[in-house]
Image (cartoon, rainbow, N blue to C red; front, side, top):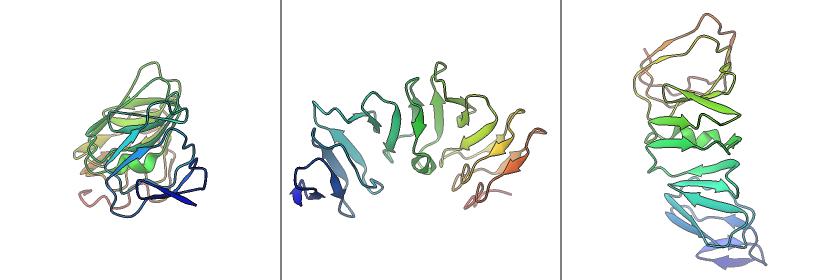
Length: 178
């Protein structure tokens, strides 16, 4: 084992094993290719020359921006580029995040009304944690995924006639829901 910037790494510093609780900022060394949970951090930067990660606008991506790994609690509006094909949805429930916008050329996702849907428009994937109004789920949506709306400030929901299934905890901790 070794240490870098107060975080626990493996001996050759290619893997960060543990980020101490309470740590607010992390600079990921260019040789690191594996990360632990990054939940308590407020800011992440990536050293130039990294071939594993890139950080831009408060968002940590895999190199090439195919996957969103982490979103800063300071991000209010998330813009998902066309290159992203995977999102760690747990970070979308941050109470500061108010809207999600997806590039029209993205082959996997789309956004409607600031919420995240699959490209076909049959699955509601995520409502941002800071979403605080009525939600009208569009016609065509058949499935609301697990924890899709969890923790959001939704006050009212209008369901489409096409809805077939709501997964467990889809509306968990929606304190404003009437």
